[in-house]
Length: 198
Image (tube, rainbow, N blue to C red; front, side, top):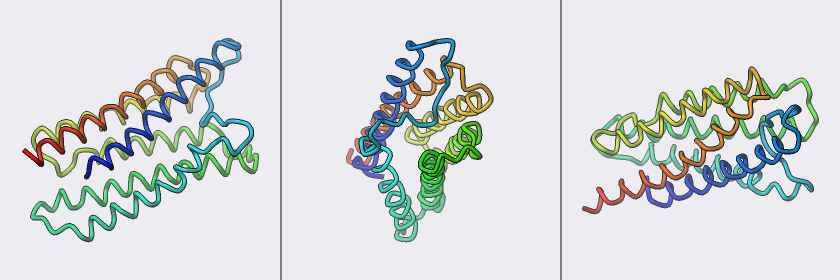
């Protein structure tokens, strides 16, 4: 993976994490007793939600590019080749998660409960945890393994919010871990590039 890929992941995770963090703190401070976590903090008017709509376009492109890398990779390490396919699957799951949010909010579907959306997000993070760092050895594999551990924490937070969406501390932790995950992705990309060119 290139530094551009890692930087893109950093921008996405960092901005989503900061946005969630600020919105959850503002909602909690308005009325702590009525606080309830939201799957996505939408802005009014709807066109201001460029972050969500850009992710709906970017994620399938990223997923397809990983499939292309899987098909084009001719290295000897088969596990490294299949890691591209695994990453494509993880990105696809998060894209489906975003589609689920958009469908729920656009059509006011109350049949799709927030707990179902959070449960699906927990599954997405669990899949990422299981697949992160596979096929990589040495320091890079360990660093990607830590990304998997952060995904595990995110998945646990999502499952907690699926059961009880009024837990402010869990939402706060989830947002902070997304920010940390974004900065860690950037560090992993920087380290990976330094190893490749050293």
